[in-house]
Image (cartoon, rainbow, N blue to C red):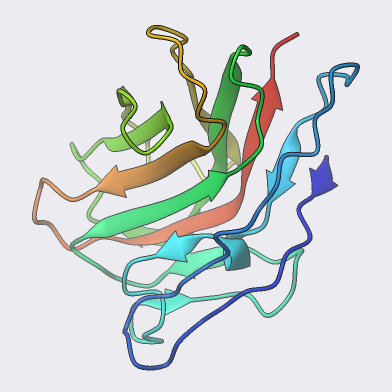
Length: 178
Protein backbone atom coordinates (compact mmCIF):
# COMPACT_ATOMS: atom_id res chain seq x y z
CA UNK A 1 0.00 0.00 0.00
CA UNK A 2 1.33 3.41 -0.88
CA UNK A 3 1.27 6.00 1.90
CA UNK A 4 -0.15 9.47 1.51
CA UNK A 5 2.59 12.03 2.08
CA UNK A 6 1.13 15.28 3.36
CA UNK A 7 1.96 17.75 6.12
CA UNK A 8 0.05 17.59 9.40
CA UNK A 9 -1.36 20.80 10.79
CA UNK A 10 -2.11 20.54 14.48
CA UNK A 11 -3.10 23.54 16.51
CA UNK A 12 -2.40 23.37 20.25
CA UNK A 13 -5.43 25.51 21.12
CA UNK A 14 -7.78 22.54 20.73
CA UNK A 15 -7.94 19.15 22.49
CA UNK A 16 -8.50 17.54 19.09
CA UNK A 17 -5.87 16.34 16.64
CA UNK A 18 -6.28 18.00 13.25
CA UNK A 19 -4.92 15.89 10.41
CA UNK A 20 -4.41 16.95 6.84
CA UNK A 21 -7.15 18.45 4.71
CA UNK A 22 -4.98 18.24 1.61
CA UNK A 23 -4.61 14.51 0.96
CA UNK A 24 -4.83 14.01 -2.80
CA UNK A 25 -5.83 10.77 -4.50
CA UNK A 26 -2.97 9.21 -6.42
CA UNK A 27 -5.27 7.20 -8.69
CA UNK A 28 -5.15 7.81 -12.43
CA UNK A 29 -7.36 6.35 -15.13
CA UNK A 30 -4.98 3.41 -15.61
CA UNK A 31 -4.27 2.60 -11.96
CA UNK A 32 -4.37 -0.82 -10.40
CA UNK A 33 -6.46 -1.69 -7.36
CA UNK A 34 -3.65 -0.98 -4.87
CA UNK A 35 -5.13 0.77 -1.83
CA UNK A 36 -4.07 4.26 -0.85
CA UNK A 37 -2.85 4.10 2.76
CA UNK A 38 -3.53 7.05 5.11
CA UNK A 39 -1.50 7.02 8.34
CA UNK A 40 -3.31 7.96 11.59
CA UNK A 41 -1.32 11.17 12.00
CA UNK A 42 -3.10 12.50 8.88
CA UNK A 43 -6.60 11.83 10.30
CA UNK A 44 -8.76 14.13 12.42
CA UNK A 45 -9.15 12.58 15.88
CA UNK A 46 -11.58 14.05 18.40
CA UNK A 47 -9.73 14.29 21.75
CA UNK A 48 -6.57 13.22 19.91
CA UNK A 49 -4.68 16.32 21.04
CA UNK A 50 -5.00 15.28 24.70
CA UNK A 51 -2.54 12.58 25.80
CA UNK A 52 -4.95 11.42 28.53
CA UNK A 53 -7.20 10.04 25.80
CA UNK A 54 -5.03 9.06 22.84
CA UNK A 55 -1.45 8.02 22.14
CA UNK A 56 -0.71 9.46 18.70
CA UNK A 57 2.15 8.37 16.45
CA UNK A 58 5.14 10.55 15.65
CA UNK A 59 5.81 8.83 12.35
CA UNK A 60 4.02 7.45 9.28
CA UNK A 61 4.32 3.78 10.28
CA UNK A 62 2.96 3.72 13.85
CA UNK A 63 -0.63 3.30 14.98
CA UNK A 64 -2.82 5.61 17.04
CA UNK A 65 -3.94 4.03 20.32
CA UNK A 66 -7.11 4.96 22.12
CA UNK A 67 -6.50 5.17 25.87
CA UNK A 68 -10.06 6.14 26.85
CA UNK A 69 -12.94 8.21 25.49
CA UNK A 70 -16.71 8.14 25.53
CA UNK A 71 -16.88 9.89 22.12
CA UNK A 72 -14.96 8.13 19.34
CA UNK A 73 -14.76 10.15 16.14
CA UNK A 74 -11.94 9.73 13.61
CA UNK A 75 -12.40 11.37 10.21
CA UNK A 76 -10.53 12.21 7.05
CA UNK A 77 -10.97 13.18 3.43
CA UNK A 78 -9.26 12.68 0.09
CA UNK A 79 -9.60 15.11 -2.79
CA UNK A 80 -9.32 14.56 -6.53
CA UNK A 81 -10.95 11.14 -6.69
CA UNK A 82 -12.81 10.16 -9.85
CA UNK A 83 -16.45 11.24 -9.52
CA UNK A 84 -17.58 8.39 -11.80
CA UNK A 85 -15.80 5.63 -9.87
CA UNK A 86 -16.72 3.68 -6.77
CA UNK A 87 -14.35 3.36 -3.84
CA UNK A 88 -13.99 1.17 -0.79
CA UNK A 89 -12.98 3.11 2.31
CA UNK A 90 -11.77 1.42 5.46
CA UNK A 91 -9.85 1.45 8.70
CA UNK A 92 -7.27 -1.20 9.61
CA UNK A 93 -7.70 -1.72 13.38
CA UNK A 94 -6.99 -4.04 16.30
CA UNK A 95 -7.58 -4.15 20.05
CA UNK A 96 -4.97 -4.15 22.80
CA UNK A 97 -5.16 -7.02 25.33
CA UNK A 98 -6.61 -4.64 27.95
CA UNK A 99 -9.36 -3.15 25.72
CA UNK A 100 -12.52 -2.21 27.60
CA UNK A 101 -16.02 -0.79 27.10
CA UNK A 102 -16.74 -2.37 23.72
CA UNK A 103 -19.30 -5.01 24.74
CA UNK A 104 -22.41 -4.37 22.67
CA UNK A 105 -21.07 -1.09 21.29
CA UNK A 106 -20.65 -1.34 17.52
CA UNK A 107 -18.32 0.82 15.49
CA UNK A 108 -19.82 2.73 12.58
CA UNK A 109 -17.97 3.65 9.41
CA UNK A 110 -19.22 6.34 7.05
CA UNK A 111 -18.29 7.54 3.58
CA UNK A 112 -19.79 10.23 1.36
CA UNK A 113 -18.82 11.95 -1.85
CA UNK A 114 -18.72 15.71 -1.59
CA UNK A 115 -19.65 18.00 1.27
CA UNK A 116 -23.38 17.75 0.48
CA UNK A 117 -23.35 14.08 -0.57
CA UNK A 118 -25.46 11.34 0.93
CA UNK A 119 -23.66 9.44 3.70
CA UNK A 120 -23.37 5.66 3.46
CA UNK A 121 -23.09 4.03 6.91
CA UNK A 122 -22.08 0.53 7.93
CA UNK A 123 -22.25 -0.94 11.43
CA UNK A 124 -19.62 -3.40 12.66
CA UNK A 125 -19.63 -5.21 16.00
CA UNK A 126 -16.10 -6.26 16.91
CA UNK A 127 -14.95 -8.62 19.63
CA UNK A 128 -12.44 -6.81 21.91
CA UNK A 129 -11.03 -10.19 23.00
CA UNK A 130 -9.86 -10.68 19.43
CA UNK A 131 -6.58 -8.75 19.18
CA UNK A 132 -5.85 -9.67 15.55
CA UNK A 133 -5.77 -6.82 13.06
CA UNK A 134 -8.85 -6.48 10.83
CA UNK A 135 -10.42 -4.12 8.31
CA UNK A 136 -13.69 -2.25 8.73
CA UNK A 137 -14.93 -1.13 5.31
CA UNK A 138 -17.76 0.60 3.47
CA UNK A 139 -18.28 1.27 -0.25
CA UNK A 140 -19.26 4.57 -1.82
CA UNK A 141 -22.67 4.98 -3.35
CA UNK A 142 -22.65 6.37 -6.90
CA UNK A 143 -26.29 7.53 -6.82
CA UNK A 144 -26.94 10.36 -7.31
CA UNK A 145 -23.91 11.23 -9.43
CA UNK A 146 -21.96 14.33 -8.51
CA UNK A 147 -19.01 16.26 -9.86
CA UNK A 148 -17.55 16.71 -6.39
CA UNK A 149 -14.34 14.67 -6.29
CA UNK A 150 -13.69 14.80 -2.55
CA UNK A 151 -14.42 11.71 -0.42
CA UNK A 152 -15.19 12.18 3.28
CA UNK A 153 -15.01 9.23 5.66
CA UNK A 154 -15.07 8.47 9.36
CA UNK A 155 -15.07 5.90 12.16
CA UNK A 156 -17.50 6.53 15.02
CA UNK A 157 -18.85 5.28 18.33
CA UNK A 158 -20.60 8.26 19.88
CA UNK A 159 -24.05 6.93 20.73
CA UNK A 160 -23.53 4.52 23.66
CA UNK A 161 -22.06 7.08 26.07
CA UNK A 162 -19.79 4.32 27.45
CA UNK A 163 -16.12 4.88 28.19
CA UNK A 164 -14.01 2.66 26.00
CA UNK A 165 -10.33 2.12 25.32
CA UNK A 166 -7.76 -0.15 23.72
CA UNK A 167 -8.57 0.41 20.05
CA UNK A 168 -5.56 0.74 17.76
CA UNK A 169 -5.96 2.43 14.40
CA UNK A 170 -3.12 1.26 12.16
CA UNK A 171 -4.24 3.26 9.11
CA UNK A 172 -7.19 4.22 6.97
CA UNK A 173 -7.29 3.24 3.31
CA UNK A 174 -9.12 3.94 0.07
CA UNK A 175 -9.33 1.45 -2.77
CA UNK A 176 -10.64 2.42 -6.19
CA UNK A 177 -12.80 -0.11 -8.05
CA UNK A 178 -11.96 -0.33 -11.74
